[in-house]
Length: 150
Ligand SMILES: [Fe+2]
Ligand SMILES: [Fe+2]
Image (cartoon, rainbow, N blue to C red; front, side):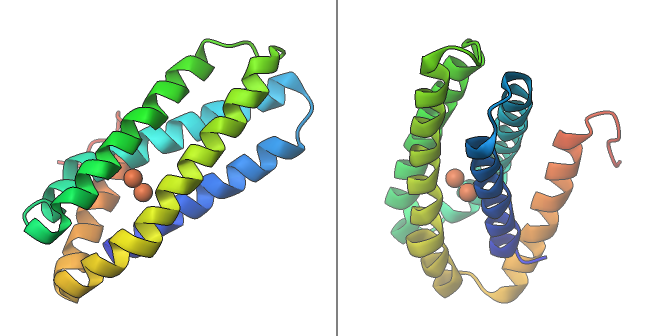
């Protein structure tokens, strides 16, 4: 799969999970959903930071964008750590989750609307396909650490 399609699919998945989280009132279910969001975002950020962004950083015209993105990842990571420590019944949990959703939405919209179109101009289809495979296999390894493919 094309790298940009794979990353966009991840974004969609997280958007859906946030939407679901808004509907849920039960604290245990809310916690479960947050854990899913937490894992999805951690895995997604990891494959971007180790595979996607380094490939972009080879091109001068993308460097600033990647630097900004890496900073936003740090903000998201910080929020995830804060929310991990909160109980779901805590009022801060809901407000911090909403804050997280806004921060993530801002970041993924920037990637989809500004970064990805630029990447499409600079990298050819074959390179994006190759990177897509790399991202996919890295993602598989992250999600199932026990089942590493040699
Ligand atoms: Fe990102
Ligand atoms: Fe992303």
